[in-house]
Image (cartoon, rainbow, N blue to C red):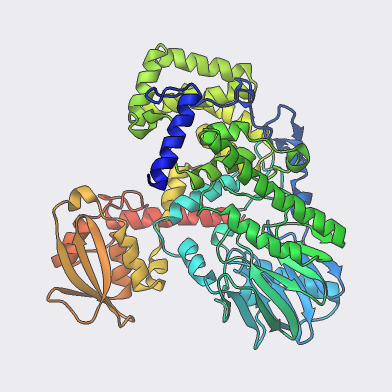
Length: 630
């Protein structure tokens, strides 16, 4: 008998001996302790406080600034001789270290202006001008102020994938509108500065961040992916190691002369965001833990995380590393334990337990339940145990049937209103569920919108999670008509269309391939069904001819050695305008391709006249630019 057959026979025998019927379907059951009707995430609390700016919030959010090393005013904080922390310019700090051959700057800030101010503040603290010899980038997020630090001959060091990852997120991309809009919601970009809906901590972004000037320079000295390297930078020995936390190009630095380690979002005061509500690539906890072991092994005397306060003393550093790393491991390990017990992601989120000293007061950014569901999704996928989810009804039909069964929209509105008015964490959550269904049937249902705003605002004020508050309060402001951009009500859909629509200047500056890759995702498969096209295209300034083939409702883009029989020459401006549907394309294959594209998610929505469309986009751009200048 084969090994597999013996194993299966043993399993079946065990099932029979346990008294279960092999032929009967078994209902997956989970421990009931965490699944009671009154269950709620410990990140939610009924106890609120008022922040100095009037925000109604939780005590954890009031303490978030110290957890993350955020300061109300800009400061060049002396960490030790020759080492300074530059804080107060955003949710991340930069660091300056005096090396034998000049100054090393670790991360360069959110913008050229911020970096210039950092430099000025550092030189004021020192009482002298500095010469920067090198810039070290932990990852791509905080590299937009590089130009302000680049003295003559200065080198820029970074991961070999840093530039690629930055372009994928900040360049011309069909995903940019989705991700940027969710970031706008999460980071409270258009929340009022004062009052109950204001953001209570410094973990928000201001509108100017969207359009701030960047002087990013790609690294000229590269760290090889996955490698631990010993290098000498500006005469300073530095060890570089993978620090794969929120991006794959993230690295950590160890300066042995100072017994100093610099990390990115690995050792913060809050629990690491295994999942961020704004979305993004999966953050593999096994990789995180592997990279964290290197940080532990350094026995550092000083630890500077770009998202944390200065930690000094071997014992203090070791305890902080232990807590941060073990928080991630317990979420990962206990989620797998719940999976082994037959739970789906939502059940696991309700049942994973973390000791209070690891969790209490630490959910200032994300929340544990979100992380558990992401671990489940990354391990198992979206499907739990409910076979209904394999082929569910459409969302609208599901809502319609449920509402009808509950007595119709009037009855559901009444129940939602009563729940919101009665208050309490369970009632507000139930009100959100009911109004989700009502608005699925009628997005303009005024009563449902008002009730939902009440419930969303109440939960936003009572969550310790900055991420969750951002979404809750943004939802409430949007429903109220108070999500204002330069005094004008705006919706997330309108913002998404704006930030997801590249400008002519962006497209003209982008590569030909980036332009064509954007077009690739505009193909409407219904329009393109059974259509076939093949032609080559060339744009000025790019010697590479591209071959475009439309087949099976997909656009395949490859390099070509020569022009095809049907060929299109375009200027860069014409190519950019074609991408946005803002000019005639001159007939032939390009015209036919244009007829198969769907640009309805962009600002320029056919059949708006080209001139009117351009003016519409310019007006929205001016609106957001004007807001950013305030």
